[in-house]
Amino acid sequence: MSYPYQIRSQEEYKAAYEKSIKDPEGFWASVASSFLWRKRWERVLEWNFEQPDVKWFKGAKLNITENCLDRHLGTLGNKPAIIWEPNDPEEHHRMITYRDLHHKVCQFANVLKNNGVKKGDRVCIYMGMVPELAIAVLACARIGAIHSVIFGGFSAQSIADRLKDAQALTVITCDGAYRGNKEIPLKSVIDDALVQCPFVNKVIVLTRTHTPVSMLKGRDVWWDDEIRKIETLGLNDCPAEEMDAEDPLFILYTSGSTGKPKGVVHTCGGYMVYTTYSFVNVFQYTPGDIHFCTADIGWITGHSYILYGPLGAGATTLMFEGVPTWPDAGRFWQIVDEYKVNILYTAPTAIRSLMGYGLGPVNAHNLGSLKVLGSVGEPINEEAWQWLNENIGKGKCPIVDTWWQTETGGIMISNMAGVTPAKPSYATLPLPGIDPILVDDAGKLIEGNDVSGNLCIRHPWPSIIRTTYGDHERCRTNYFATYPNLYFTGDGCYRDANGNYRITGRVDDVLNVSGHRIGTAEVENAINMHAGVIESAVVGYPHDIKGQGIYAYVVFANTHGNENLSRQDIMQTVSRIIGPIAKPDKIQFVSGLPKTRSGKIMRRILRKIAENEFEAIGDTSTLLDPLVVDDIIKHKI
Image (cartoon, rainbow, N blue to C red; front, side, top):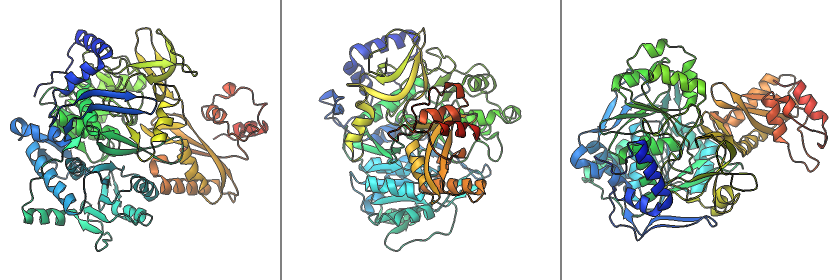
């Protein structure tokens, strides 16, 4: 398979970038022409950032699974589409060819139809990292159902919130999941969530861990039983539903600066074009490469760069069920060695964690197949970049440091492997088609280089967020209202003397913990639900492994002299309401919080205390009670 839009030199990058800014519609029409459309577009783009209202490839008809599966069958049918590496290295791995995957997706698409799922229906997927998760996602897309994958670490309450928001009538789950030496009781968590969601009428359960589960007659069915029904009926083919380019493909929930999760909506046409275009260019994919993205499909990275981007390009994508440190810290390197992985795309958190185990686990394996290394989720610090470069890439593999978001759908700013130069801790340059700018707090354009500001995007790209599900005003307020006619990323940014971009962190109340965005308000709401908590404030602080840790200041009614037990109780509460990923790293009990006279909590001061930057706290005389700050500093953990 060839990619006419693949950029192979710095000169080609410059020419493509210039064309994309001067004639964005012509540029994207040229890229989109490489894809399979049932009907071509009438207009490439209609847009208005005030509403916001963005339409790409208007009038075009397609089905994304025909681009990810059907069109590859003639030339790549017997090539592995997915290599699945199980949690336990002793368990047999699975190789699923494009022909097998097409067959399984069609079968399960018919299972969904047989269970009443129709085009436009929302389907919630809460599964471990097994191939059937990929099959379920693609089967939804095949019939035009809108999938909403929920990460397997979220709590019953978090699932219930998402089910209610999406009004999903169907849930797909497993009896349980394996993650390292843990077994996660997924069906049991779903059962707890469904107590609040009586509108869910069907739960399809895959057997994975053989954990005993409750199965309600009329609502709960076994995946394998449903497949057998389809085979008995001879329904092994499922024609792909014709979709409009702007029909929703999926909803993915992300934490906001308020407690309620935001359902980010991506659409069929633009998302398909952008994820495949960015995958091929950033990683400089060549046919035959084995691509290993270590993310979970519950996050946007897994959607875009385990499934849709690689499959759109006809690549072999490796899906891993386990964790990088089990059964030992050589697991990633064993996988690279065993499958001769060419592209490794992982998170700085994973790299920093593995650095702590020394080079023994690395040196036990042959990493000579690697051609490209990638980093995602947060900016990679220079120490981790150098370790990755020297010890994993052996100085021969370009490292792509990718900046993007759930809302952008795909990689926006990154060097292209071996094509444009890398710079440690910098995302470097925007992809052709992306027009980033820096503005000051008043929205004034900051021109030139060696400057800092708030990162905005001036022109839409095909995989831009279309709305937040069921609440378009929230989408407008969050991303398009801060600065008129601009998409505001929520990130601060520095542009160096050569025009390279370096992301300096969130400027809103969202934390980036191990590459996962968690809203401070969401964590505070969970803490405040504990019976003993009067109020709380949550901030981020530098963490050696996670990048950012969660520091909670809690006003507590009575710890009964046992602060540690009270801390554990609060962590258990957060874990139950949101999930273990949101548990605070530090909880400091305080007598009060620094507030203005109008009652606003001064989180800026709390952030400086958490970061040990006491001299940067500034004037506290305008606070309602300045002595509170002294007391917090005195008893800091």
